Amino acid sequence: MALSTLNNVFPSINSIPPASFYNKQGLAQWLNQNPTYKHYFINYPEQFPNLIITNSESTMFSNYNFNLENVPLASPVTTLSQQQSLQYSNQLKLFQTVYAYNSTSYGNSVRQGSAPVYYRFQTYAELMNFKSSVPLVNKAYPFDAMANGQNEVGSTLAWVVPFPL
Image 1 (cartoon, rainbow, N blue to C red):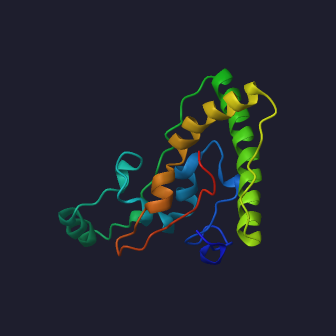
Image 2 (cartoon, rainbow, N blue to C red):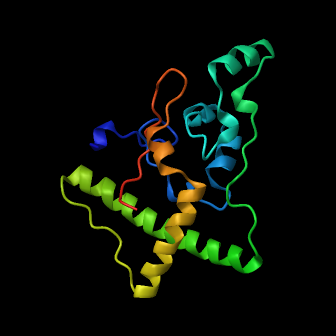
């Protein structure tokens, strides 16, 4: 995607979420705080089963002034022991570091017309910690939905993760 098509202001359409976007609470909590974006996730029942509305339900709910934005969402990562929570925090911090580095490199490469130079792990253990963080981040942040989620009128959110996970 060319930088000219990217919107630098998150959470706009075609924008890159900042590293700070990725936290323990996950996308569900962010959507609870920014409910107008819930409409982009109605077609992802595995991640957001409460946001599914069929045509017959749509008619029924409209009679009761149903508002999708008022539907509370729960994070898929909820029950962690203290040790798991600490490990998840450490993994998330490493993910944020790698993500911030790679996002900056991607933006610079697009502006300069060169190939990005992505984060280089210092040790094998650091690489393995990063690799083990990705499934947890994928659970809390469904990247496919963030990139391809469409609202009721077919507008796509198209948030960009600027490097392969």
